[in-house]
Structures are given as structure tokens and as C-alpha cells.
Image 1 (cartoon, helix red, strand yellow):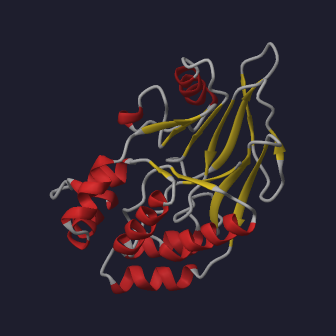
Image 2 (cartoon, one colour):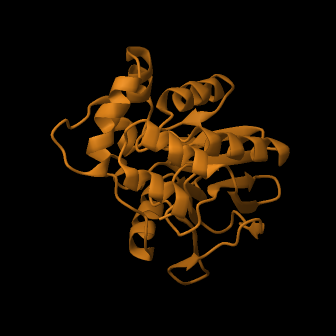
Image 3 (tube, helix red, strand yellow):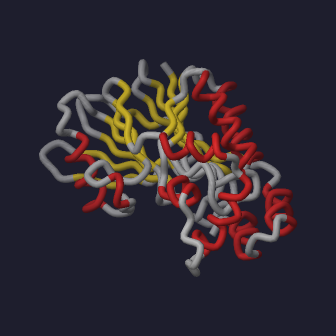
Length: 250
């Protein structure tokens, strides 16, 4: 099975479609969307509807912190997330908000553990952004001895951590399009990057593809029309800084 792993779409429909089209062409036959379907971006209705279709076709869909916030927005908040949550809330209808609220925080698929943030405290929205936090997440998921792989999003970067023989967890920075052997005799944790709002200085959409038969993991980056999405953000009346993020990948 080839499992396509997407996270942090952030209401960016062209980026989502770019990832899905590439994954299909690469032979993906199962999909997992690891939370933050909405928030920040201008296409919440379209993205939620498309991912609901994916779920109907067998995809696993998790809830992220922005999905949670946009169902119950903080109307007096001053962060970019708070300021856009109320707008997103108004765009979605009751059925879409209810569906988002009902998505689980974690899921397990064979020897794969899926989470938006970290396995040790998925409801606290911690960032697996360094070796120590990744170690805690991997240890928590490994309470199930069958789990060999942990995949998450939230950090908007692509990273791979693995447990070396007789050593602690080590971090590996992947190259886009290069398949990495991930044999199951080791334990692995990956942050799959952001489909809709990367923050590593590269505006291209990101996702990962796990070939479970060959034990290969490939991180991908895909060009799409991010300028049109930035324009949609401005036209929607959302903060201009969010358009700049889309254009610069920051």
C-alpha cells in the first residue's frame, strides 16, 4: 500500500489539489489528512467538502488545532489564528462545523500512528520541532508495540527522526523527491510538512508518501499557483500578512 500523508492544508484548495493529483500519479491508494484543514486560508468550504469526499473514499482525517478553533472561535483574540477563525466559522455551515468537531485527534493504521501534533498530548497541540519533543511523541505512540511509524504535521516543516542502534533519536532533513529507506526494525517519526502554508522559505506545497511494501518514505514539494491564493486571501478581506506567507513560504 502507498499511503499519502497530508497536513496543514489551511483552506488552500489549489495546494490540496496539487498534492492529491501528484499522489494519485505516484500510485497512492490510501490517504491520511493530519489536521488543520482550515484556518488562515480563503477556501474553507471547498477544502472541507473535498476532504469529506476523500473520507468517504476511505481516507483517515484528523482534527487539528485550527479545526478546533474555527468551530468555536475566540472572538476577542488578537492572534492571526483568532482573527481568521471567526471569518472561517462564518463561511462554514452547521454540518461542516459539526463534521470538523467530530474528527479524532489520533488514528492507527497497522504499524502507523497518526496525529496532528504529538502522541504524548495530542490535545495540547505541542510541536514535535526538536529531538526531545519528537522523542516524547515517539515513546508515547510506542506504548503500542506494533507501532513503528509516527506521522504528524503542525510544525509546517518536513523532518524525519529515527532511533539509531543503541543511540537516542536522531534527526534527518529530507530532500524532496528522494526516497528514504525506513525499515520497520527501527522506529520513525516524521513531520510531513504543510500542504497549504509551508514555513521553511519554500512556498511549494508539501506532503509525504509512504510505500509500506518497500519501506520507503518520500517527501514531496509541488509548485502550484500560490499567487492566485494570495489574491484570494486579499479579496476575502483576510490579513495581508497571510497572503505574504503564501507567497514567501514563511
